[in-house]
Length: 119
Image 1 (cartoon, rainbow, N blue to C red):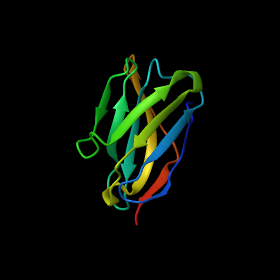
Image 2: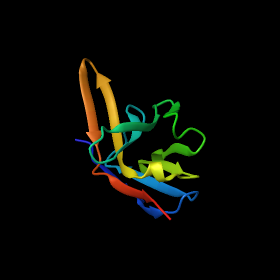
Image 3: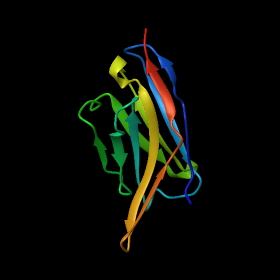
Image 4: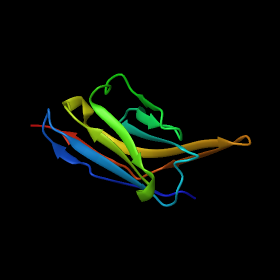
């Protein structure tokens, strides 16, 4: 059972920056797609960014050019650098680890960290 723990959320002003961190309980980056998702009350959880085992990244259109996903294998951590934030970036942010193997799906979530963008 992979455990994911997010940190780094908080209050930030529009136009500011914030970095979210996600620590995994074991070394999984070589086999799992890591991702950040976000959710607001009453809405579905939406993809923000992902990074594959080979390092390929993917971003939601709404955050392209502003957010950057990265990882540090030595620390078993994945990050989301959020720059030029907007009020619409306010949400709970969740770290995700996903893989499929031999027909089985492995999908893990962290507990979430809240980000509020407000002046």
